[in-house]
Image (tube, rainbow over all chains, first blue to last red; front, top):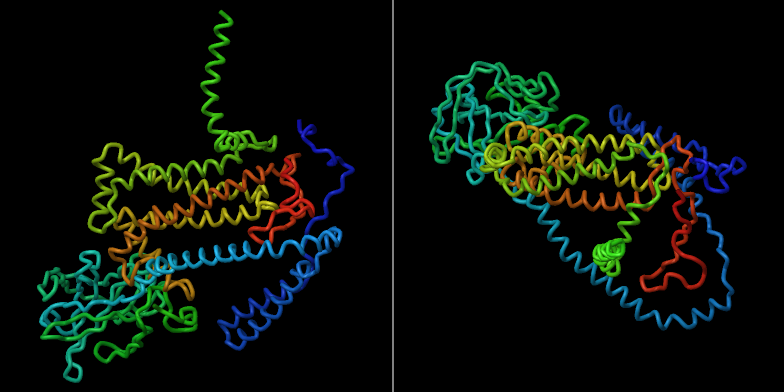
Length: 308
Length: 269
């Protein structure tokens, strides 16, 4: 029965222990207000943010000071043993403890050194290869004749011959004619800049055909799109890759290109803030290649100061 | 007749207890298991208290089936999908073990959340069990990571594009996001390295972390005792005790006659 399990001293006359509550104070609320001010400032103005940061630091410090008050108070000395006994012990022991202290320190030091020598390269090997020496090899997209002026072509190519099929990617290519006597191309990546699904051209697709190049063959498919759309979450883009609807945060990525021996060569991709104008005369706001969903312009770009 | 029987019985008992005594004398393991099995729990524990053990059981099922699946699975882009097809369609009982692992993953996560809900509603996260709640949160995060990394391994269209979206979701995190996504992909694009690193994370690194944290989690449950339900007449935990830290150096004796050291008081349940 429950009564039998009750411990002595827990009867009705036993006093409830005092609940351990935080002391009533205004500082947490002031701190929260300052944080709200920081967030408001991100939208309104950076001055408000700066004021918010200062207030948050001040109120945060006061809050921590108050909360840590108990810790800062000197603890009461607990039943100090007779002074004589302590003195005797301390006189005897320092000599005995020097060597063991040294051994203790050297064990810890050696252990830390060995651990560091083993851990640092392993961690480096786990992380660094994903960042060092990452580049996009140039890709041969076939002779210029395959790209009629003013027409869109869906080009599916192997991004890296060494990686094989897994690196198959797709770009939308349009030849814009000559600009200053140099051929002009618009090459848009099909990767949606919301979360990376493949966008589709909104228009009737033609017959795909494999075209031989100096590298692996490229599949080219003509199309007449009115824009591009993503099936995953409904992102929509116009014919120059500007966002027209849905969740994407910038315009579709584009590729650099070069023309070598009458062939179109795909270069490095780059991210685009927005595009003004059309075709060969388009003004493209260019940024370093970024992951989908990363803001490259607008106030949100302060959240992504470094892009690997 | 009766005498023979009692002698037999005596011999039999000896045959059983001798190896146990041998083990106990050299390891203390028998006593530890006894302590674990026969420790006191509140008198009104109920079925909700079994959710933690159920989660652990689901995890063990995942562990065993996963290790067996690794016999046959090939984590390379050219072979992964074909090896999954082989496991499902060709190998004897492969469909069953893969099914257990696939559905067991959902069972594990569901039980995890039910267990968390029970702990929350029973107030079992309060003093002195705050640390165990924190360990539980870490376990939840690791379990979700198991789900994320395991989802890619069938290497079909669903898993590929779900992982593309998942990695790019990580990339949108402020400041660290772009680095996190490159680390997960092993580069700028999903490629040959992505699958093998997800495989390694899924079956080596994260399970190792889970096993370690589960050990700590269960140790704390045993040390602090099972929480009684909120309506129970049993106390939910031990009373606050004064903690005396006496140790200063590794070689200094724990006590030098200035009174008891360590945590005073025992769990009182």
